[in-house]
Amino acid sequence: QKEVEQDPGPLSVPEGAIVSLNCTYSNSAFQYFMWYRQYSRKGPELLMYTYSSGNKEDGRFTAQVDKSSKYISLFIRDSQPSDSATYLCAMSGRSGGSYIPTFGRGTSLIVHP
Amino acid sequence: KAGVTQTPRYLIKTRGQQVTLSCSPISGHRSVSWYQQTPGQGLQFLFEYFSETQRNKGNFPGRFSGRQFSNSRSEMNVSTLELGDSALYLCASSLGTGEDTDTQYFGPGTRLTVL
Image (tube, rainbow over all chains, first blue to last red; front, side, top):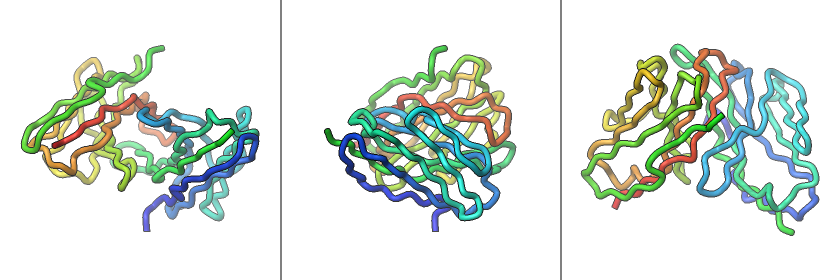
């Protein structure tokens, strides 16, 4: 079992829909959780980060962490075709002298007009 | 502030050759990490450099190596290329605090194709 599980999709939704992207993890030591967005042929860009449990909102995006269930989510409201990309969850775990993020495989999202 | 830059953006090599990729981190960032991204395996951590020293290493063979210079710029080298080395190689920089909140910022990547 991988440390971080993420459904690769693709997830196809109509414009304006609410999108829910999820990851589960097995390492209870993870405290810092991130979501990256990666457009085709580009590097991942940091979208949001949260520390420990709870919700964090930024415009149309809401990140949610449930440490008791080892489950994190990213919600996108009023989805747009420009949101079409691969979304990667990541969480930081101790490795040697620093923390190295462990990434999910990414979920491909397609928002069609 | 300029982002992470990587050169070259695209490379085509043949089996057995070696390749060197370059990464310039965000100004003020002292940690540089390298990742390999493939459709089958996703993002896999190669190594991290901080203050010219390798601080962490992933599970890749010795053909993959790197170094960091005093200005925090980093290079990654792959020797004796194999077909399976075809991938997007991503560089990420961070402040290098060593804390879990030390967020990584990625470059656009170098797409390597091995024929």
